[in-house]
Amino acid sequence: MAATKGKATFSIRGDLLDALAAAVAQRAAPSKNALVEQALRHELRVLRRRALAAQWAQAAKDPLFLRDIYEIEEAFSSANRDHLDLP
View 1 (cartoon, rainbow, N blue to C red):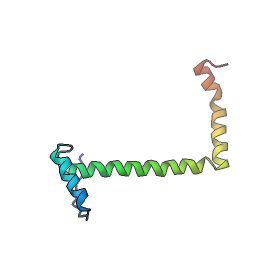
View 2: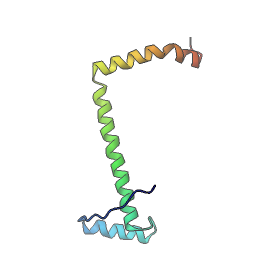
View 3: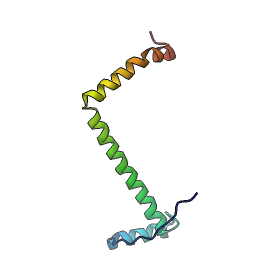
View 4: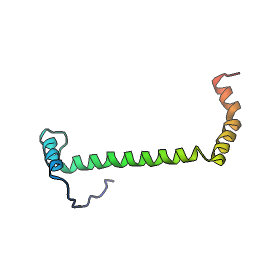
């Protein structure tokens, strides 16, 4: 099922509007809406990745988290050795 679309109004600097129009004129995207949507998806993906990286960085300092990781690695070490033919 396709996502429903909604209208939004934003104030954007004139130079960005000009660049948007130029990109569409050069066929970088089928429409201004499509290019703005693509840019927003990209930026939101970057923001989510940054947030996730910050969470992983915080977890890497958490002794309980690190102990859990160690225990999981130990629990599966024999399975890993069997699968990889390691001594």
